[in-house]
Amino acid sequence: MRLETRDLAWSDTWRAARLLAHAYRDGTIWAAAGTVAGWRKQASLTLLYLAELLICRWEKGFALGAVRGDRLDGVMISYEHGERPTPWWGWLLRSFSCLFAGPVAVARCVRISNDLERLKPTEPHVWYAVLGRRDDSPGVGYALLRAGQARADALGLPGYLETSAGEEQVRINELLGWTLRDEYVLRTGAVVRTMWRDCPVKVAS
Image (tube, rainbow, N blue to C red):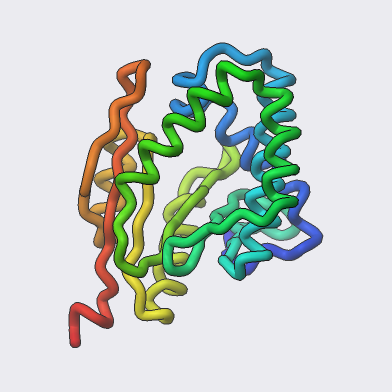
């Protein structure tokens, strides 16, 4: 069945949060945060990404979904101008996520988040904050990233992202016009890479 990318519907918010939680359950950030029981990790991540999706709506970012028929295969959350102010209810939702994760994991994740925040560019840009897909649906990340780039180009803005997916993903991103900026090494030795993409419209002008 043909894969399509479109704005994520409100009715898909809960299953999008669950998809992202599943996609990131074995991610490098969580590995660096420490050992968290499977069900606690799933609950924590689901609440975290539910908060992220709702904050995205509130701050007028854009959430894209990749779908095959009625099946949601991938989700990307992006913010215009790289900004993501958090409303009070966003912190409340995140606090429930923290309860499941535990204090040690939360403290380590906050430290990582703060370190990555300091690497962000100060000029206006679209921040591709979160991208996740089903395990059995390769190519979805590529499709979502291209759709996000088209949205950023229409806004006349460059793009910024962070990836811990490894060298192969970096090469794919480079084919789409991205360049490496910085590398952040986690306590486990895994590397988070930051990447930048100029807006073709501005470059051409």
